[in-house]
Image: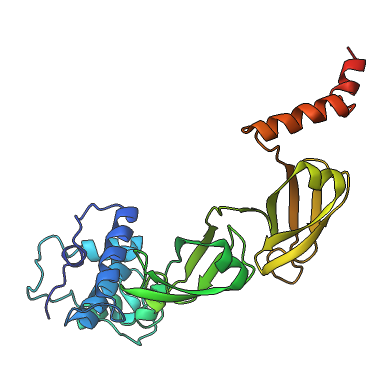
Length: 303
C-alpha cells in the first residue's frame, strides 16, 4: 500500500505544535469542505485532511505513526510489521472497525475513526459577528435589508435580513446557518448587531423617543395647542399655561413598539425671538418697562 505523509498533507513540519496543527487543519478544512468548496476533489481532500488530523492530534497515535514515518515519503510503498494494527495496534489505540479512512490508516491503527467519519471533527461551525446600521424609522416600522455577507460566512454575495419593529441599538439578530461552515456538521450562525443611526430630531433612551420641542415665550406663558411630530405621525399637544423651559411632557406609547411600548418624551425649550428689527426692540423695551419681572430674584436673596 502507499504510505501517507500526514504532515505533508496538512502542510506542517514534523515538530509542529498542537495549536499550530489545529490552525493548519482548520484553514484547509474550510477550504475543502464539500458543502462550500468549489474544488473538484474537495470531498476526497477533506477526508484525507480529516484522517491526517485524526492521527496527529492524538499524542499516542502520533507517536505510533512517527515510529515508521521518518524514512518514508508520501506515495511510497509501505508494509507494516507483522501483526501491526491487529486488536487495535501495538499501543492499544484501536477503533470499532467501521473505517471511513484509508487502508493505510486501517493497517496502522486497526480500522475505523473515533466515531466513524467526517462528522467527528467539528459538530458545528463558528458563529460570525457583524453590525448593521439602520434608521430610527426602520427601527420603529421594521424593514427588510439586503446586506453583504461578512467575511467568514458560509457563502459570499448578499443576504436578505428582516428587521423587526421595535428593535433597539445593541440587540442582535441571529441568522441560523449563516456563520462559518461546519467541519463536517452544520454551519454556525451570523449574529447581526443593530446600530440605530443618529436622527436629526429625535434621540433614543432605550425604547423611549425624546424630542426637543421649541416653543415661543407667549406659548409658554399663556398656554397653547401646537403640532408635534411623532414617528407614527403628527399629533396636537396642549402646552399648559406657565410652562417652563426644560419641562417634560410624556406621550404614552409613542416610542418604539414592543411588548411594553416606549413613550415619546417632549422636552419643552422656550426660544426667545431675536431683537433684530425696530419693532422687536420696541416690544422688548415695553416689556422691560411694564412687566415687573426679575428672573434672578431668588438667587439674589441668597447673596
